[in-house]
Length: 628
Image (cartoon, rainbow, N blue to C red; front, side, top):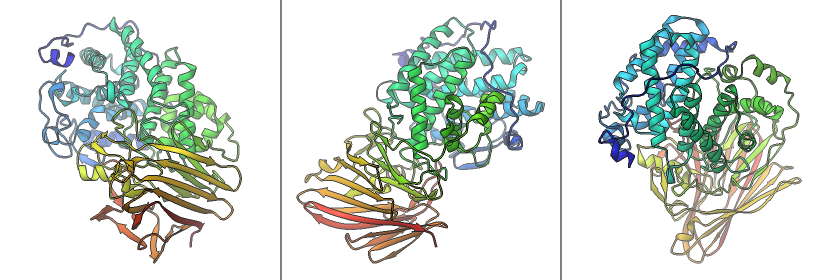
């Protein structure tokens, strides 16, 4: 109703009330000694020079300030009409919406403000003001594509809060600018409050919307509505933290990068709330701690985390510029400080500049007092979330880490960010990724690639009759869904076992139930995979195995040998006509990995194909050894 009413100017905040500046939010950004001040200054100078990094585009000249309504990837200029009336999913109308939205999240505004705080160079403070004024001019409320998605407004509010604090007294030196900024803040809050993501879209978007409204209501409690916004947002965060994340710490979207995003939202809300004299409930904090334990369990000794489910490279705020910055390690460092967890410090490895900005000298002091215990003892089973570990010598150069996926497809009815990967697994040895999940690559555009990367053939599992386990219904929608179920998980002793089953192919005319057993022998560093396909009729079956980029892969008639600098994997299987290697293939699509959004590169995929009739067991043996 509000969308329809707003077309007639009803319910809009066209004339924001005057803000009461008696009180603003407490400081939540420190004045740290940065580990890489030069990297921050370099990033800020690039922004002032008009060179932007937007997903796959690096150093693209977009100008300073840029054209905010022009898609930097395709050059498409989005229409200037009521935002809620724009079809932002249409490439013809807006270009690639991810590229169009990303700069307007204003992470670069924080870069300029942080450079001002770190250096005192007025170019950065003036640049921040110029950037904002251009955005206000080009993106007037409620017109254009930047007034369509409440999540985008919410992330923008978060970055505005950081920029406001980093700019400090500079904001008040320009009263007209300050008032214009506050008017926009009010309009952002009003918009979000009226357009929360609901029903099948009440996922990380809803959580992010509550985050933006919560942070804004604390940082700028300037209007009578601020108290109501704060109450709604705080309550929503408490509810969604428990609803969207399983009690064992697995985010229900079944997408590890989105787990990172929601964790970051939860952490930032707790941090900003605590600075303003309030904390979230013990249940909220316990859920955040469990989520950190899940990330720690997935992370191998090399810092690699499986790319399960969708990923879009989003950062809520960017205040760390180290070239080797790792978002998962950064979050574990935050949780190590927040929860006084020495084991999480060990997984994080080092304190990054993001945490220095957040926690300051006090946080660094707490970090130093944490003494990691040896050896690493990860949580091995996440029964509600659906992930199970096998392995040995965790946290050492001799580590073997296997992560088996027996999880639901995704969250809510559309399972938007899940992949058809039931009973797939990843394997790393000594921090070298051997069997991997290839990632995501595309969202709104390039449908064929979107479908491949989230399809069954892109994962280390069994494909039947050339179909996906679950039926794709759209870029962010699944129709008929595979259900995975644990049968057994044993990790005591030298002989470890995972067994699960999934019913995705029971929808076929002749139903096929897929059972998989993964047995790990820690003595001989061997893995035996048994795939049992229960059926009556004849079916075409394919086993896909995706090897990491560092693997050199070659075949014999019934085996595959993959070697890295330090490890080797020998895989044998007598099924079908033997293995076929695919690299950068387009017919069929195979042999690809996407480490970053909208970027893909070649890897080697090994495929065993053959026909079965009736219930059949296919055995794959894997032996791990030191590399050659």
